[in-house]
Amino acid sequence: MNRISASLFVVALLVSVACNRSPIDIEEPTIVSDEERWMASICSPTFMGRKAGTEGCDSVAVYLQRELNLMGYSVITQPFCLKNSMDLLNLYVEIQGDSDSLIVIGAHYDGAKSGKKYPAADDNGSGVVTLLSLCKYYSDPAHKPHKTLLAGFWAAEEVTLGAAFNGSKYFVKNYSGINRVQYYCNLDCFARKEQGTFFYYSPGFVRAGEIMSEIMSTTDLHGLEFSVKENEKRSSDYMSFYAARIPYFGWNDYDTSGHIHSTDDNIEHISFEQISAVVDMTVKLIDRL
Ligand SMILES: [Zn+2]
Image (cartoon, rainbow, N blue to C red; front, side, top):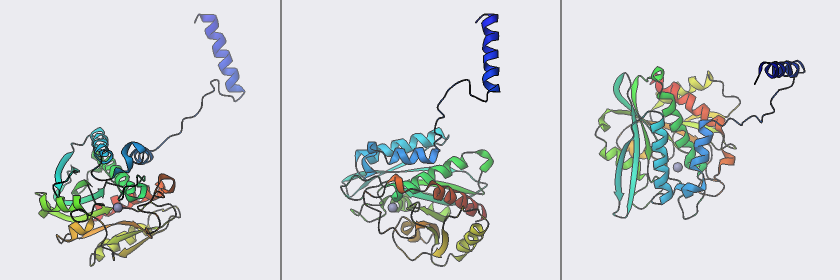
């Protein structure tokens, strides 16, 4: 560009700014959060519903390792075989805190229970995405936790071939540091848009409920419906930890009966606001335990 045409370009630019018009017509890109990207990926047909023991579920394990590596984590893999017929894999990362006592935070990453290839967005894309989000938060050295954290992505929670909750059960039996685990946080099925979410705690672990009630009363929940109660169910990976007398807490939809284990459990019904509120309040609770 010579000096005259450069001057003409500047004049044209000034005129267009003066006329309050953009000199370049561009289409603004849609900004997608990491949480939306992760959810869209793991619910995509590529992973075929993430049914345990299928190629889709094995591939999602590779995907999760890659995402965790990108955050700077070394991923520890824990392979095991169920009833000599299904090769499975737990994944976990350790986040060193100021003390060595441990809080394990877990989410099962297998999805479809039956032969149907449904997206399994709430059960348990919600838990997987929330756990990735917590890993991202704690990957910042400024967010070093007081206690050491272990983020576990469990295999085969939905499979009843051996027993239920297979991956977490295997972890509890075989992890060498299990005696250091003080609490378990379970992330499974809590981001259904049409449902409120409750925080639950293991029978007798009233302190967790009290702290969470305080957190909820001082957090801007943007009108989302959240509540606190002692757990009455026996239906997820916390059972593996409770069997080892480890107190637990976690999050759940008010009602899961209508949508889980069906093709209706898809990304259209996921509330990313609920996921982000759960991430925020879980961080606050971990900080106070
Ligand atoms: Zn589940």
